[in-house]
Length: 440
Image (tube, rainbow, N blue to C red; front, side, top):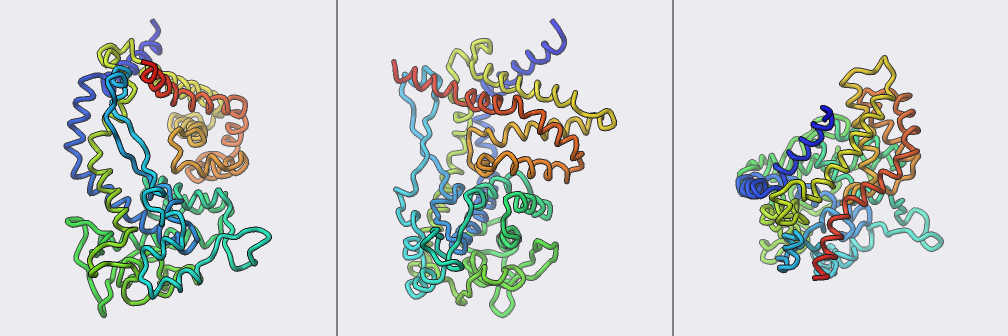
């Protein structure tokens, strides 16, 4: 038995022992309870800032709440039947249809009427830009967004925030995408400035609907305005003054907002609040979603273990999920071997080779995600657009442009096939187990 084969067999056993065995499931389930308080704080701080920023941008860029994938991404779960459990189905998850639950999310005017005080409704419905229709809408009085750019604002930017810290390096990442997708220069700066202001206000002041007890500080004030520091897209540090949450979301604020990309807001909130206390529906929905995610944490173990039969938990050799894992890892190993042989001798040190391997693995994975949210913009890009972004992204991390060009062109022969195979493998066990459980 060769050393390399032994290592592969050991990795498979390790994966089974750590993720699929009975003891692994039990230990991971207990760990979920251990981290629940930390997780709850984390998701509140992350999700609320992003959701509220995107909802504000929705009014400015004419995107309905239902179109923000991250805002309406939530699931319910039910217990499986006995037949389903025998096929390793431990929990059944179904995505919540927020459009059916809250019809006002489907249309911007309905959203405004449901959430905004009556005296401000006509201003928002009459002055916001409408979605353009070619041949019907007058030029300059509507918004025409290419689908890839809109998808970027709707979901990709949120996913990338979970993968990168929202600092200057994250703005550089936004700029790369902006250049590739030919977005207006103002969009990436405006998005970054809004989000950084929201995160700063969340941590250094206390804003109802945004901040969290125990993590946010009491607000410094000046002339009855909250004052928080924030860093803009150019790296400049400012003191930001605001009164209410909607000022941060959509208000025109000097130093943050480009002309024409913010609204002149009244001193007090435009949101409907019964008895000045109850949250408007758009905030209540967000809070309910975050709470349900926090309470559902312990189910993460069963979601990860789904489609794992009882006998597969005790015997690694019977585990189809382990074989599925090994098939995907086989792709990774083959790609890494191929890349290693393509690197010129002057760059062939272990660190550079690892970087090039990661680059090509990203080229495989990001356009072949089974769970697509956050990656849809890359799936929708043309090969040329993706190539421009991919080379620019890795060149800024120190890799050689010519070597990247050679890797991209050389992979065209086999990459489309591997992407399709990766998608097929991702769904294979789920489809077969569901089919078997229905046939019993």
